[in-house]
Image (cartoon, rainbow, N blue to C red; front, side):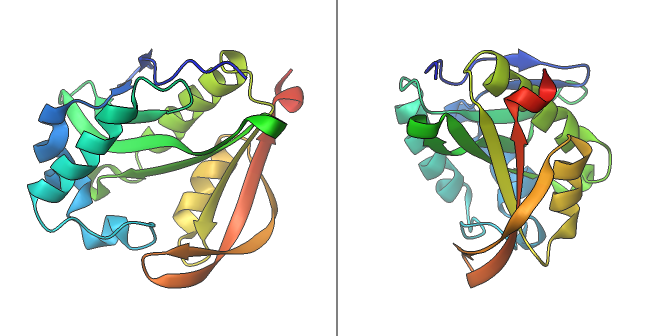
Length: 181
């Protein structure tokens, strides 16, 4: 796979770009402080902008690595990030990646996440040369699964995973590059 790292991607409504330190306040305000957004994620709800600054500091330190992919989902209309999408597992041995995402509740149901996920999948298949892209969601979060279905991912099974609530059942989805050709 090509280790290109997080590159800027533009869609009709979105700019997907590397985070900047200045995004901490928007991250905290728009999604990371909302317990409804973080309910099924692996990380805890941020208690202050300091939590957001800390995670961004970590991400910024990894942007030079070719196998690190973490995008701010910036809505062009408002000019600030409303969510994030990234690769949470990069397995070069089988040319596979797993993606994860979250977004401000204020923008749920507007097709923004499927737009972002489609753009990221196109980048990962076409430029990074991933053969398989996977994603999973807590069974109690079917809306996340609908995002995966909308972009052409297929359910491939169930598994157990850990999020900040403990051990949970997840539904796994996948898309193969060969199915898109």
